[in-house]
Image (cartoon, rainbow, N blue to C red; front, side, top):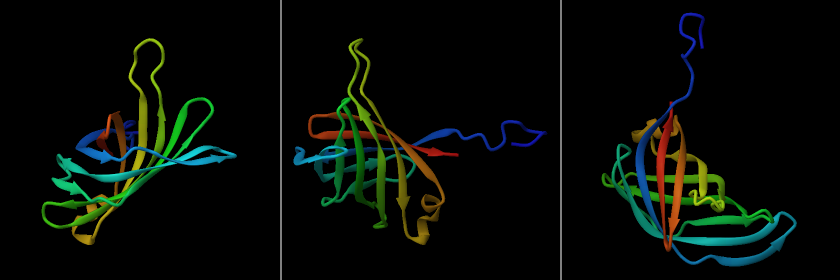
Amino acid sequence: MTADNPDAGVPALILVGTLLVDVAPPVDLGASPLGRRRMVAILGGTLSGELGTGVVLPGGADWQTLHDDGTVSIDAHYSIRLADDVVITLRSTGVRAEAGEAGEADYFRASVLLTAPPTRDDLNRSLFLSSGVRSGGTVRLDLYRVT
C-alpha cells in the first residue's frame, strides 16, 4: 500500500485450478485431548485449469481432527503429476464445518502450499487458498492464487 495507490499490495484471489480428489472412507484413529483423530487416504484424482492438467497420485492422506463443536481440522499431503511429467506436492491445512440448519453449504476452506521443481518456480512463490465440497468419495477443491 502506498499513498499514491491505497490498493497496492491488497491481496486478491484468482481461480487457477480445480482438483477432483478421490478419497477412501475415513479410518478412525481414536480420541486425543484435541478431538477424535482420523485419516482419509488419497486414492487419485485430476487437476485442471491454469495451473495445468494432471493426475493426483495415490498414496497421500488427509489427517483430520474432529472437534466437539462439529468442526474438522484438516491437514492433507499429496502429490500431483502434471501433463508435462512435473510432480508437485500439495499441503493443505484448514477447516471444514457442517452446514447450518438454514440449508447453507458446508464451510470448507484451506490454505494450500504447493512445492515444485525450479521449472515451476511460480508455484513455490505463491500462496493458494482452496474452497472445497465433499460428495461421497470425491472432494472438489477450487484453487485460488493469492496475489
